[in-house]
Length: 228
Image 1 (tube, rainbow, N blue to C red):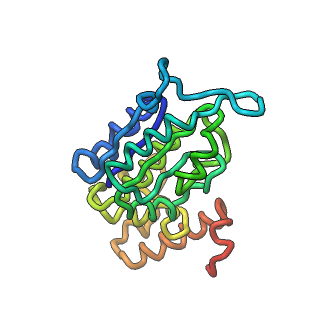
Image 2: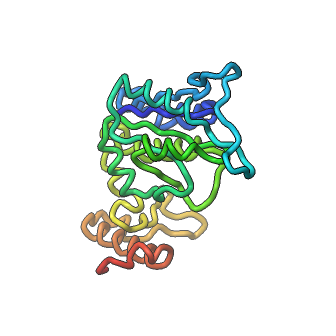
Image 3: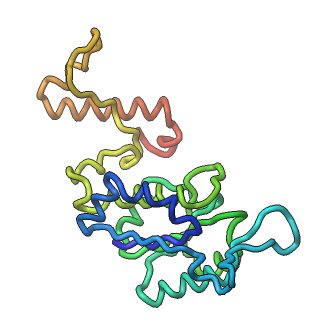
């Protein structure tokens, strides 16, 4: 998979993409991420990429021309399955969206900044708009990093145990059950006996019941339309 990210602040993406699982995915050749500085596509002397909004009002707007030039330059090199705009009014990112995007080959992500991007970009280029929550960040870079991480870890071969992602929270519309590791007893705090029993079928039943109970308590909305 290849992901191209357009931003005015590439530095904000350096650390999230150069460590841990995302670095491993790239080292294995399973994920290619390229970050593009939008200012490199500005036709203006001082590399301007924003301007005042028509009609007045506070906040600058990302200009049309630099974004168009960057997107079209990238499109000349490859076809994209989705051109994604990170914006607070997009579809809220969830596991289903991450799963779907992980099956694609080439993605482009545009990071919003300032007051947002000229609406004509959204009308003529963007195919999918995604938010990571009902709040506003200073720009779309951190949101883009979250999206890339959510997608990248699902690619076959990225995780050491490929079945791990299948049991993450939300994959089956349930939160994950409690997990434990050594020691089995600490300060009188005991690991549930069932997990030490070696009875794998019963352990899986216990985990399912725990996941269901945790979801009922913490995220009942996930079960609203489920017969459980």
